[in-house]
Each structure stands twice: as structure tokens, then as C-alpha cells.
Image (tube, rainbow, N blue to C red; front, side):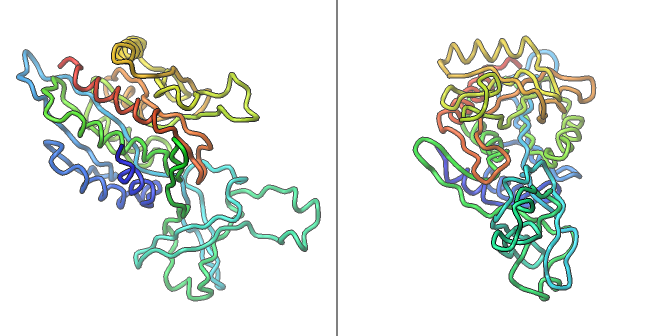
Length: 349
């Protein structure tokens, strides 16, 4: 398993609208894997691999993997005269996970390390009532340690990301931005896994932008490609942890990839769900059906583009999602890769 690639993907900053560094990393990694690679006006990276079999009547079936590049983060909204940065979130944060975080502020002149904390009094001088208040994300500020000089290097709109390295613990991988650099990893490794296989379908891997703020890049790239089948590749919840009712756990880590049936953005095609289920059983690839009561993913954009497409989600259960301690089980990631490779090799053209 290429953990080095996953590490480089996760540790590269890229919030919605600022995915360029992740895109450049992917472009360097995929050289020679595709027949055409383009960047669309929004910044999504669209990669096409032609059918490796002589086509019969008509064009080959288009299968599209949608793998969003962006991570949740912030954009600088104001720099005070004393050099404190106010920020606006791009993506969904639980403010309880933002206290005392190390961050990276990316500017045109380079990256600057900083710390993020809410405005207000420390524990030593605050009242019990003040300590009960949970700030909103907008109440947090970033301190670069530069004082007034911060105004000379940071501009409104600069990107702020969490600054934490990827680590391996036991059979797990822990990092910020596993949502959704996991999918970027899968999109790359799945095509590598095809090798010289004579696949009948036309494969499109779209490394999309701005998913965390509304599936934006997936919508434009899906309209451009007009797939027959859309595979939304993403993370999902793994709430197999203390304090969560069994019916809300979504996935159990170590039980295989998630075959995503429904969330608030789409309902998967029934026949496609059954097809993946039969393939996984035949290939002895562990899987679990998944549903979410809320949230969405890029597969929905493929399903609704142009005249529509069949769609399903291939997801990896992730604990502590939208934090710097996102955790996956390596075997679940491997299962997701195995089923994608098997499907792309065998899909009818």
C-alpha cells in the first residue's frame, strides 16, 4: 500500500477554491496513466483513459470516478492592525474541535505557521459561565507570531489549513484531510492497478474542486463528461465509537469498503448497487452497505448531470471526520481499491 502517496496528498494544503497544489501533485503522479488530462475552468483535473478493446457498435460506456481534492479549512477575512487574522470557514466545522490548533497560512509569498484559538479570556481569569460558552468558528483568530508585520504578508482570501502530519498507528492511518485525499489516492491507484488490462469502458477520473461547499466542481465536470455511470469516491462516517447508538454508526472499521446507498444528495441506482455487491462477493472483497441521513457527495452530481447517469458511492469509513484526527482502517482502504480495480477491468463497454 502506497502510504507515502497518501501522506503527500493529505499534508498538501488545499481548501475549496485553492486546490492548485493538490492538483499539481496529482498531475506529477499520473504521468503516463491517461490518454488525455485537462484542467477545467473551475480547477478540476479531468483525466480520460480510452477503452483498450476494439469497440463494437456505438461509443464505449463512460465510467466516471469523482474524487474531490479539497479539504475543509478557512480563508482569511481580515487582518487586524496588531496582526491577528480573522477567518471564514470553507466547509463544515464543529467548533469544539478547533481549540488550540496549529495551522498553516498559505500566501503568495509562502507558508506561515500559526496557532488558532478563540478570542476571549484564558482559564485563569475567566468565570465558570464564560468557560461554558462554545465559540462559533467565526470567533477564532490566527496568530502568526509576526505582530504588525502580518499585514505585510497576509491578504484577504489567503488559505488556512490545519497543520498536522499523517501518522500510522496499529492498522490505522490518522491524518487531517483524509476526507477526501483518500479518494484522490484511490483514483490514482485504481488506474495504476489496471496495468495493461484491456478494459472495454472509457474511464474518466475527475479530481474535483469545491465539493465541501456544494459539489461545485463535480457538477461542472459531470456536465462536461456526461458519464453513463458515476462512482462517487469518498469517505463516510465510522461512528463505531463510544457514545454513539448502534443504529447511527454508519460503518464499522475493518468490515470492508462502504457501498453507499443513500444520503441527502442522492439515492444510488438499485441495479448498480446489486452489481457491486455481486462483484465484491465473487472477488471475496469485504463490504458493508452504508446510508447517511444528511450530507452529500460527488456521485450525486454525476447522477443529475445532463440527461442523468446511474450512480453509486464507493466510500471508506472514517472515524472523527472533519477533525485533524480522521482515522481509517488500512484494510477498508484496500477493499475500496480492490473493488474499483475489479469493476473497471470487467465493466462492459
